[in-house]
Image 1 (cartoon, one colour):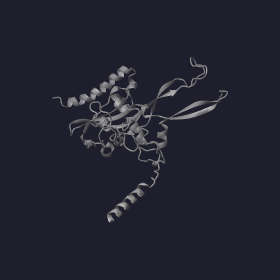
Image 2: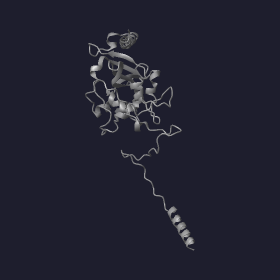
Image 3: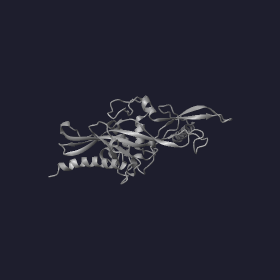
Image 4: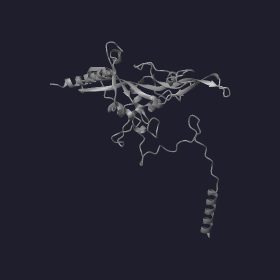
Length: 319
């Protein structure tokens, strides 16, 4: 009899428990106040569990370098053109796809201009010596393009004024990087080594031309056509950028299962194509283009500087 009573009571409690109405769930609210639907998991890209590279990756520290061990060094400036096929792994994807980001997107995310209060964001500097930082307002101004368009009356189609449009530059518009680096020979390790000092992203965008009425071949249209413009985003101290590069995977052409970070590609493996446009000289800031006008001869001079660095190391071991 007792067993029947206990069983009946248990069933009664179970019915009451399952019969309670569900408590409505409120949409997730983020730190910036947004109530939009948030991701429930990391992007699904593999058929197995993937470790988050940002949880354990940090830049590999340089070998301690004593100034007294440096018996030779030279400072050079080079340009990385992302239009070259060998540099496509730094340019693509143009827009973030899952966890994959381009070098330009990593830099823009690190600068984090969407949150002006973030004082730990990556800093931009006014010159290549990285000692005078830009303000957040100056940095933001370099990432926008202002355009003025004419406003028309919807009935008479007469010009009634002008309106300023503000457009933000995207990561896919960063097509060049100017890099300053130092090559030196360490007599203690008997090694010719290189270290990147700073990197300067270059934005290339199309600026529309306002061709007035009656312009040849354009009729009454305005704002037709455009011309390529280049803009300097600012100088970035490479040592400050490396922690962000170490947390981003990059596509490996040879074996995508072998994990490589942007820091591996740029700092250690140096898997990129580039050309030298200046070397340290007595004139201070003279570029190759200042004394050689022909593009073909500029390339020859760039290769000559590269060969000079290689020849220095080679001649050290010639008996």
